[in-house]
Amino acid sequence: MSTRKIALFGLLTALAVVLGYVESLIPVYLGAPGVKLGLANLVTMIALYCMGVRAAIAVNLVRIFFSGFTFGPASAILFSLAGAGLSLTVMGVCKKFRLFGMVGVSILGGVAHNIGQFMMAAYVVHTFGVFAYLPVLLGAGTVAGAMIGLLGGMVVQRISRVFREI
Image 1 (cartoon, helix red, strand yellow):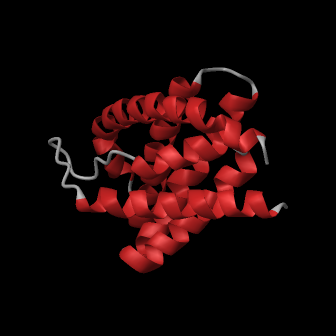
Image 2 (tube, rainbow, N blue to C red; image 1 turned 180 degrees about the vertical axis):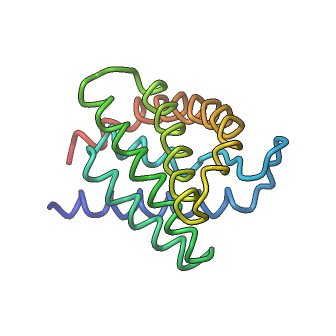
């Protein structure tokens, strides 16, 4: 791996951690707890489209573990891994087979992230009752995914030249 690629990976990882932390400071209450903007997912989309699936997975793993151990409870790591794992799988498949544009891929990623977290929650509390709350978060995930996809498309369009040069 080239020095330039390592530097870009480090930059994306640091940006994801910072955006995740900033997001935790922004009080968002849309009638339901747990709704987030998904700012760190913007970096995931950039990594996915500019560096590939493996880089997006690596950036996400480092971000999840660093943020989990630094800013949150250890249980947050478990839920984040479940959401990110399903989300990146869905987004990677959709991107590979060109099923949707960046906005569609991002929306499906947001929805898959919520489903992954709910699956982990159902496993942890041993009940599927948690899924009653899923429709609320799926709506929020769709809106947030669309916004992140639109913003990600604008960012990737402007910085893709930097990634082509590595």
